[in-house]
Image (cartoon, rainbow, N blue to C red; front, side):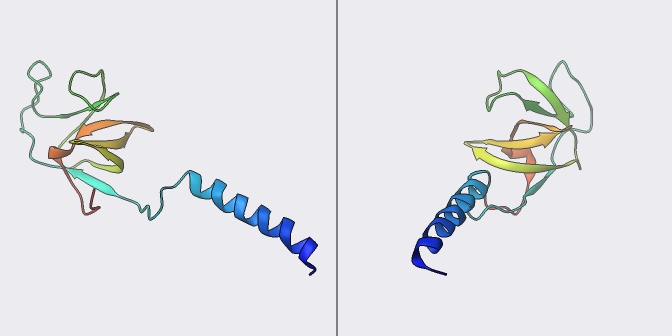
Amino acid sequence: MSFRTFLPVAALTAAAGLWIGASTPAGAQYCEGTVHGLSGRYNLATGSGFLAVRARPNSSSRMIGQLFNGDHTEIFDRRGNWYKVEIGGTTGWANARWLRNDCGY
């Protein structure tokens, strides 16, 4: 392979690597959390017995789902005391206090 041929191939390979890496953070790994420590009595009015999954990482944001003790969910990111999680095929934010994991987030 001549230098002229190698240069375009190397550039394409590097570009492909950047494109693939753009969707996955460096050193990313699968991370799963387990919900724990919630009350055993469900009460939507008082917010007990479930972990609210919210559209944004704050307690005043719209609730888009609920998780319960023992539920497992994938964790994608952390912002302060909030984990970005997957629930029902969509992502939202749950308070980190109620999710155990070994991800180092």
